Amino acid sequence: MTRVLIAIALAVLWAAITGTFTLPNLLFGLALALVALMLLRDRHESPRLVAKTWRVLGLTGVFIYELFLSAFKVAWLVVTPDMKRRLAPGFIAFPLTARSDAEITLLANLITLTPGTLSVDVSDDRSTLYIHAITVGDKQALIADIARSFEARVIEVFR
Image 1 (cartoon, rainbow, N blue to C red):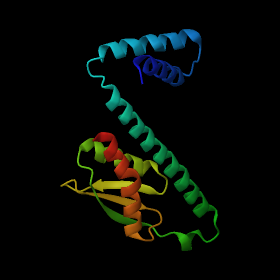
Image 2 (image 1 turned 135 degrees about the vertical axis):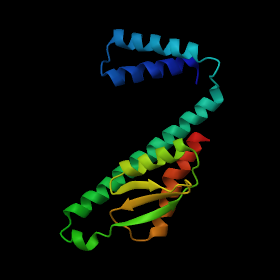
Image 3 (image 1 turned 90 degrees about the vertical axis):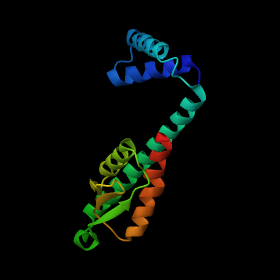
């Protein structure tokens, strides 16, 4: 992706954030993007940036998918007449592969933002993340699902 395309993408992002898609606002966003890219030109590694961008987009896609899926599951749980029978809350100890504070924080936030799950605590040695889930059937399956979906993508983004 060339710097011009990055600048255009940043200008559109600027317009989306400000909520004004007028020509002057897009041009202002483009000017800001060009200044930012000029200031960061020494740190701009195009192949690595493109790869990292795809990883971030992949993580975003997985999060949106999991968000809608879990929101549907929680909504279905709430509207079913036998909710109390289906409810099986519990805690799991999730063994962390993520090591840095940024990786652990992002993983914990993604889990908390997903309906039906809540990150509660991290062990002192940062090897375990304690998670509460509204329905815990098979703990090992839940751990494997989180490791495969969220944790693997978070590690890809940061490493």
